[in-house]
Image 1: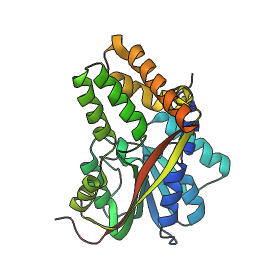
Image 2: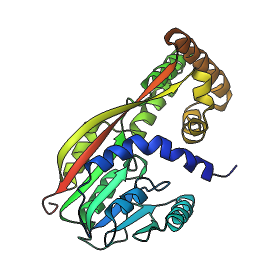
Image 3: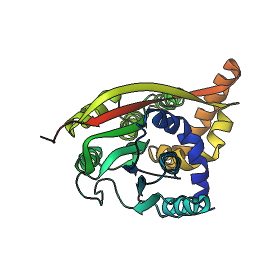
Image 4: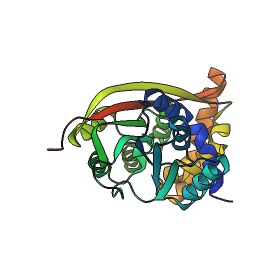
Length: 269
């Protein structure tokens, strides 16, 4: 099955984050924009159309699928003020003081070195540049993770319980931790707004069988467990989620996220 099918799901997942980001963008004419972790092209291409010429929106992403998809979309839509580059945010291939706006729509969670990425953002941004970052938070789908932990503790899998908590921290940092990284990189934080949306399913079976959940989340979850325990643990998780859905009338999983609006006001110390 083509990996590009996963990218069909990304606009659904990323839409709440991206719409919040677009609400906070300072719309200015003739600016250079960098989008970190462009994924399937939202909000990169949408922002390019809203800014129009002569602004130029550059995206950077390590995935060949992302490059191919965004290239096809921009050509199909006739967008001429956008360009996608394959690369890593820890080494942004642009000169110093190049961008007036940097955005990342839930992309910073996926880089290998957040501090280095933010340092690079500071380097390539102009004085008074705006940086907008959206990131989902550790409480994402907290009901699922609580049940996951309950099942592990039932089985006396203490080591795996620690691995689960480590996994959450590695994937989703608390806003206070992110704020320190941003400020240490040389940006000031204008605002940090917390938002949330819900993923709603009839029950745990529907949730665990959802294509995006299977392709984007399931393998990392399974990697926490010994191979011999995967089926048993997830059968029990599914059972508990279904019981909860029967009590509540549905399974609703909150996805809280933060939108950082930042400003480059000084040279990094």
